[in-house]
Image 1 (cartoon, rainbow, N blue to C red):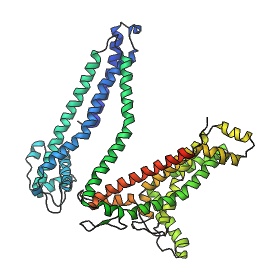
Image 2: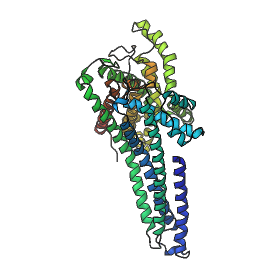
Image 3: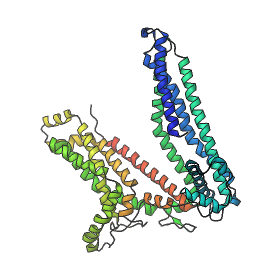
Image 4: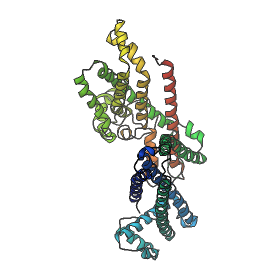
Amino acid sequence: MSIGLLSLIVIVLAVAGYFAGRRLAVSKVAGDIRKLHSLPSYYGQTVFLFTAVPALLFLAAWLLIQPLLIESRVSAMLNVADVPDGSSVSLMMTDVRRIANGIDLMLAKGGLNSADIAAMRTDLTDVRGRLAEVGVALGTNVTPAVFAAGKAYHDLSGTSRMMMTVGVLALALAGFVYAISRIQPEFRARNVTEAFVKVLLIGASCIAILTTVGIVLSLVFETISFFRIYPAKDFFLSLTWNPKFGGGSDLGIWPLIWGTLYISFIALLVSVPVGIFAAIFLAEYASKKVRAVAKPLIEILAGIPTIVYGLFALITVGPMLRDYFAQPMGFGSSSSSVMTAGVVMGLMLIPFVSSLSDDIINAVPQSLRDGSYGLGATQSETIKQVILPAALPGIVGAVLLAASRAIGETMIVVMGAGAAAKMSLNPFEAMTTVTVKIVSQLTGDTEFASPETLVAFALGLTLFVFTLGLNILALVIVRKYREQYE
């Protein structure tokens, strides 16, 4: 049974439980709801929650744990002797999953049944032909042992889905029966429902924290694996980035850090002044008609895909900067440069700064403006000495959001700045960033056993720590210089 159909059955059962619980509560008091401890709807909500929530939580947990268990069990079937030279178990598992998906497709098309699949010969020519008929292509290093593992993967997945279906439906029915059996006039349905909902709200609020913890742990574990096979001293102190798959790599991080900071700095030089000035104009000077037109037009920039900005940098901004600035001044002849990516990225970040700053400035109490005007200050003096200090924490937050967006941008850098990892002060030379190299190191059929691949996780963790440090520094600055008002 599919996940969607199973979830729909649970929801339908829970909705039926709501109406059944409500009707049963009313029937227990012969229609006089004044004898009930809670309103009838609370009794129905109790049945709904006990039916749906445990079953859906079990379904979510099963979907998270099941693939890990199946992967570990099937990968254990692939002995070292079964893995061809130049491959790894992780690469073989890719073909195992493809074989399992191909078997599902063959069964879905009706050309074969389960008995035919079980009796399928391990002649690889026959296997490749059958899988090719359903659009599944295998790697060149597939062995009979890998095909056997694929069939085992398919069988385990089918058994797991059946167990999941039985478990979810059993939990839903058990919750339904348990909640119905507790319905009595004196039952505190409202208290139970509110406590249940409170637990759900606490769980929802923990999702962000748990997600952050999961991201950090996944990076930390893989980074530890990287530093076991590549010296941390060379990674943090080397000024050369020269990865070579197969060995002999020099994986110094500083050229990437330099490119990231350089491009982000230029992007902020473009976006922060323009964004803040635009926010001040829209909030303090513009009429309602002008604001109604200008603000949506500025915010349109935030909706443009980054690939479009990348094309704009590649086709328009890069050649223009090369022809009118770089070549005449003798700085270079490449259209891919730090300046190209920085300028285009700054244009992309303008709405992030302007929209948030505009909202923050509008949130400053009008009484502060009136008091400043009453003391004889002009509008510009009021903006500089009252409004901006009061809005400083929010404006700094907007700038931080823009900085984080700039540090994490990839597509504009790929198309506008190139992929050269080097350290230079010339803004018209091609450079690259940490995020671009993370993508390049993980692109293609790579195995997670070489430093050239695992370095992507070390780069990600370093970028995470660096961004966290910037946020902490900004918080310290805001707390020190923030203006406080009663």
